[in-house]
Length: 371
Image (cartoon, rainbow, N blue to C red; front, side, top):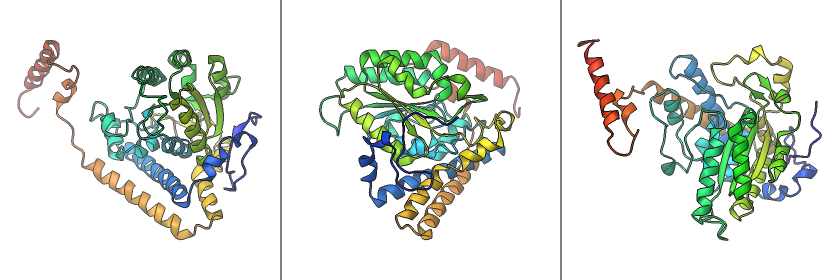
């Protein structure tokens, strides 16, 4: 059943600018973007998809343990990721590959983590304040809220300086809205008026459970029950996502408290490479959403502004080169030493950890040479 809720949309599936009534407060921000900015958004989305497809193929070929595809959600990720300022902190779930790349995470580091070669993949302070992936559903919402409370206590926000004031952006899916952690995060965020934006990527499936069974009302409406604004945006419209996220992050930095964004998008691929979506969804539904492809929509928009085939060919070639480079890097990865599992458990030497490391060394030695 089609939604009758006020959804923010700026460009339609055909790429033509046609803002909805709900887009009125945000349209000017999006339509002020220049040609280079618009092309950059397309470039980021195409690069994200190329990396996503290559990583999924690598998993199928046995080169990493698991992969969570982001295919179809590129506009939601790139639009929101580009809306954040460099001083903002971002807390992802485990599918935000496009946001990660926007914040400077190399694709090979995403794969390295999914392959199990590292504790967490990267140092957030060295990579755009982008925190580690979180596989425990919804727990990152509490991490983000606690961090946002700290930003507030440190008086690093709401000073009146947009160039330095900080905000927090946290991602989660529709399935996470049923988790206690997420609802507790809403309570604390609203109570303390934290400088943060909750970004809900409603891709319509919590593994095999449709969102229609998870919630009897649109998810953005839940924000009102916790005392914060909620906005529903077309998650396949990169301009609408960027404008809404940018506006609400500005509000958060100004001391106006938290907000919830529900980005309506679709998970075209599997939940993870351990999942078979053909067992629970129809080909008709998949075809309907595939026709609303966010990359195709942005290409059509750029075409309407005069972009020629050579522009898109260059973007596609760059993305293909990035995917090829990722494959080369992954095939060259080496397993880390077993001692890595003991590193960084504590900040100072710990006798229990030392004893466990010694036990493992003795155990391995008991197999003899060549084992």
